[in-house]
Length: 362
Ligand SMILES: [Mn+2]
Image 1: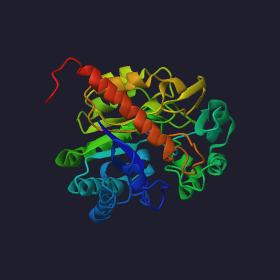
Image 2: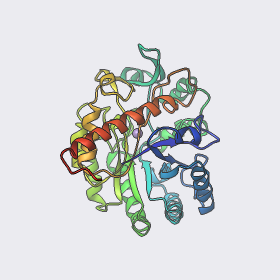
Image 3: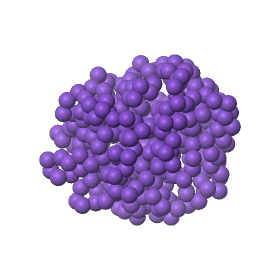
Image 4: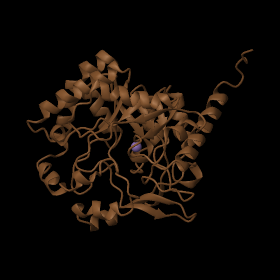
């Protein structure tokens, strides 16, 4: 396991590489070329420059989150061939720069959905939150307006203003796309990219849909163990794997997170570990990472990763906004640093317990 933090690049992130470097045990970042549109080619020069920027701080790139998938690929329009060719060339360029992990998602229209970006918790911290009643009551085209006021002036991934200006057209694009068509388009894409993934040993790690059920009538296909196993069987290659995001799979309380981790052994290439606090089945907020602050047993999640031999990067995922920080919602420095430290502590304790009684090296 390697502890990492997500980094959006100096143009967009309020957190610096120098700050990340000072979080104990964090040695890598998960980053992206944030200015790139889905479907566009990433040149080797651009990737190399990003790598140099990160390495100058004493960190390294542990993986890319994300190389986004265009709507043409998800919907299966004729334009997808050009976008897939660009995706393959991008993977090749990443491979040449010695980057071997790519996180992506296959969610239609919205990358993720929350109904509040700054819900106030009893301790005065603010967090992202979701209420099904609020989703049911709002026109999806109005979602962005409602949320952008709380974004602290930042551009949130998947909610870029230029994209949100076309929400109605995006919904029209997906009008005929049901779960089966979306799944077939995912398989089509994976089959096309597997040869380059094999050539450069690039592990693809699909991020679950968040929340893990259909919102606004849009299909969702990466939501539980059965759906992921189906995807992995359809393209049975170790490079076709998953990002295990506890906060996304965990939105559905039917998902037994440690059990899922064990079922996906060997195919989890990247982990997002965070907690949620449920107020009811249909209303949750993103609590601190600490088990007792939320609903999940974080020790059991980390233990399942440890016991299945997980050796990829982990990042603490979202954090609360605390200590007066102004940052992209979920992506401040302070609470993610606390999360990384807590998760590192759990891992150390699990590791030491596993080796108790073993001979001590001189
Ligand atoms: Mn996640």
